[in-house]
Image (cartoon, rainbow, N blue to C red; front, side, top):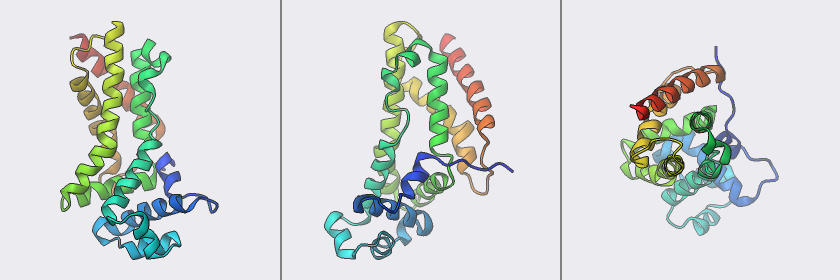
Amino acid sequence: MNVATPSPVDDLLNPSETASRPVRILAAAGRMFIEHGYEGASMEEIAKAAAVTRQTLYNRYPDGKESLFVAVAERMWKAFPIMNVANDESALADPRNGLRQIAIEFAGFWSGPMAADFLRMVIREGRRFPLLASRFDEVIQEPAMTVVSDYLGGLALRGTLAVQEPEIAARDFMGMIDGRVLWTQVRGNSEPLARDEIEQIVDRTVDIFLRSLRH
């Protein structure tokens, strides 16, 4: 049986006892969204889990759960490990290793138990609350896609890789990673992929993507 390894998301949702009040609030909100769903999580329950009053919570997030959800997602994005790949000289010098780094870091980011549960919650609740899914895309998915697009554009400018349309290529690549790694891990009752399994899938996916660009 494979065991999911912790990700930065898991760390964000389980801060230390000495964490600041804002950090405790966002961590509690993330946990309550996972446990009760977006609809089921109440501001009162979130306040209780964060050890603050409901008034304190509304003072900080007067728009309620939506603004809290966005704040939780924004905090996750700040921990995203591939943010600087477009300026990484080693990644720009070696497209295969750069793409491999992006894919493995992206898969690892969502591989932790709580990280996968949070993503499942967004997918499940997004059917009833389209705004939830769109805000998630706006705060996390689209910036991540921009990072990959900028990286591929940088490779094209250097003549390292023949990328005609970086934005389309980025969506193709991330779509392959989503389908081959991410959704395998977050679908219901699925066993988490081991690190070596992720690396094997990523290696094959990167090679297929690079061959498609050459053609």
